[in-house]
Image (cartoon, rainbow, N blue to C red; front, top):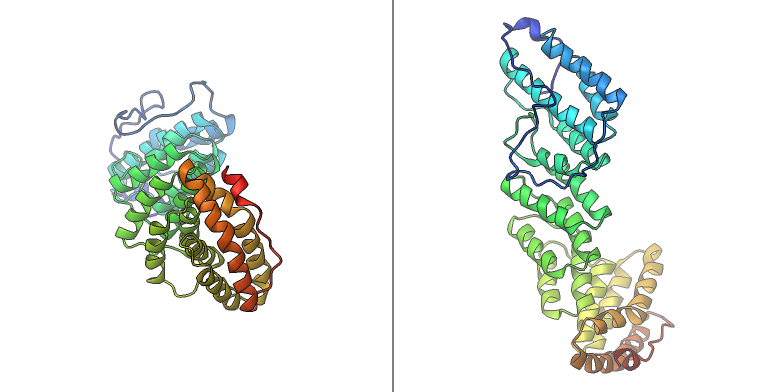
Length: 348
């Protein structure tokens, strides 16, 4: 139920214990990990002014404050101390709603989402994690939208530990996973080179019945091809085929790389031809750009991922197979002038 305006007069007023900021917000360290800075700041004047109005309304006047005041406080939060005031007033408002208005519902989802955004905005990440707990004193309901705010922060800062914490909180508090969650998590794992972690979460998403987006499959398959993990690549492709028929540039070229690793250059060329024919003419330049990266950049990546004793064998195989693939593409009507360098020198 959305927090409303002056409805307190319809209910008998009871005495409600109002907590001051200094005595509230003390939660178990076992529940909330804290990576807060040790620098002490003061609340901003703008946030403190709105906070005082809210507190006066519920403490002195015993009336429900105007709805816009709480939203204004969320918007005014500019540092960690402002966020502390926000959480304190949320706790007091929840008690007021329970005792005086007989409102047992949490605040509406939009407000809960904006609270988490405010925490991220001022980098009060440990406080933001509290928005993901279903049992809290603030009247907040954990949601995937709040989780995404934290995950996007983790992505921006390449913070794998924060991503892991958020995923644990989602599981512990029964927040359902969404396709957008996978997009962010896969991206973080790829950018931080965490293949095993990506596979762990991918299994969790698939087991939960989440219908992964094409972008998630692209990232997952690109990572597998980058590492030369052909077994995983084909397993991922099997899952992808169960959800969608046509290839994207990312999934198609990943499969082509898989065929090259299996010494099947003609099949690699066939996949690229299908991708080329399936996509609109406006995407043709993107296909050619991806083909160039496949020939000039990907071999370096996959060779570096191998153990020393395997690098020369792989390099020699790609040195022989890539020109065959390019020749097959020309025969299939896909024209390209991309040339492969001397991969054996790289392996050495």
